[in-house]
Image (cartoon, rainbow, N blue to C red; front, side):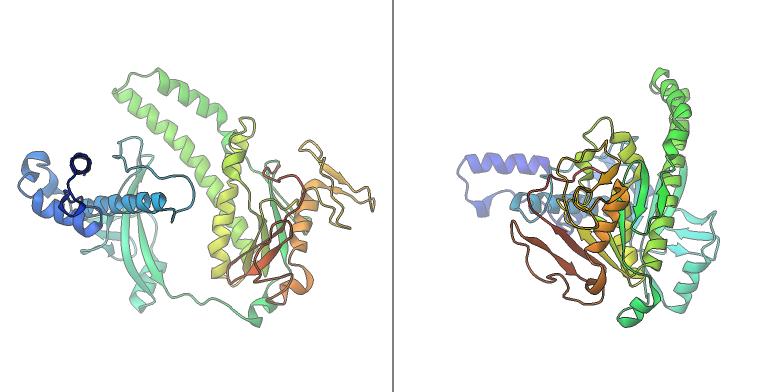
Length: 408
């Protein structure tokens, strides 16, 4: 592809018309055709091992390349948000995630304790798969693909499954769940709810910090390419994986409980990438997983029939009094208690922010579809609408208040 792109640029500089330029395979069908036809004779020389692996390994790589090229085009044309996407790069062993994917062929669960994989045959797994095999047998699920990956020396297989799920909707959804709740995410506490409940930050990496430092020094001092370096790299990866698994389990427990017990959940649209630029807060912010909380709530609220409301990034939840609405633009991160100069309210800073988030949809807003200007566009300098949709929504206010881009 790079050679074809270079040839195409040279032809353009020579004045060759566009319809006569060298074609470049850019889509998945074109890439597959290039691999199967044009490279059919060169496979035995360039990749003599290609016949030993399942064809899906190469198809998965071509599919990822086609997705990367599509993102490049969308980013250049302005159809993709976020940072500008560059040209795809080759995966590097030891740096990228080791994985391959099956989408066709005889793959899937083979009983409760075995998995059938093309070219690899029948493999025993450690976890029972009764829930999956039962749904597949009853016709309530359909396999779409399987991804085999390696993490910290262990192999995992994950299935992409289309499952029939009953999503509660309508008045029955609100009768079975609790009142709206505001969730203020932070570093000192993992989450503070508007009900007054505080979820402590377990700080899993902090408990492994001593072992992590020792393993990092041992890995840095080892000889590159030696067997000792591989052993030290595996030990370092196990420490990181254990902390990540502990964090993931805690976040799943929290988000599942919120989605099941509350009708409406209000969170802030935090600029986590900007918070990571603060070198004093970067480690603590990474340990909490703020973005992961919102990502899990986004799909779990759809599963359990609740609603997720995302407050605007500039909504001053911490600087606004939850009792009378007075704002303190001079509030800093070191001020852990909010003191209102208008009504005299003295309240914890995080609890005050959580109550303000809940107040965005409290009362009649949680019972009507068009409360507080729902389904209206946001106007600069005015009030930001509360767009209520099944699963997610957005809410907040704008004004002269200082940005709330950090959580504590």
